[in-house]
Length: 199
Image (cartoon, rainbow, N blue to C red; front, side, top):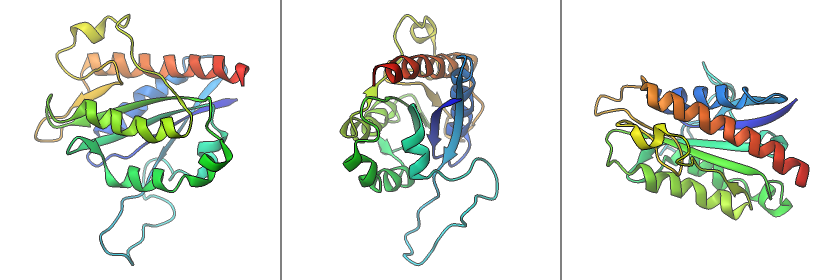
């Protein structure tokens, strides 16, 4: 089975919840599975390391996960309008796939969560798009043909699905956020199949 990598970093659970719904959408497409992966936290102490296997949740991503997928959904919480450091740290280490052109022509989508509507969601999504575009990936957004995008009062942008966690960091997704996450996953998987045949 061909797989779409759903790669994320989540601190309080919101981005993890979005990742699960995106994976549901991916798996609605016959012949495509979702591979959920995360990245380890980073530390300001240079000697600190994470265990090789997380205590719970999906395994940590490897470069092989990235190279063997037919598409990527990338998610991170918003940190001052940018992706979180652990995701940036992982992406900074993808020089090998970049040199080899392993991701050229594959589709990618992005998703995020913030504490407020104006917490930098769109700039975070765009910050994640930049390294993916350097890899030669084809960006897949959420078109306004997804009617929920026009009516939602919670998360959602044409750049990618979002969640508004509030100041307490509530990871519970709204119905609109779930609808948009599933739609984004399904759209990404369909695009991945179409583009894979063209590569």
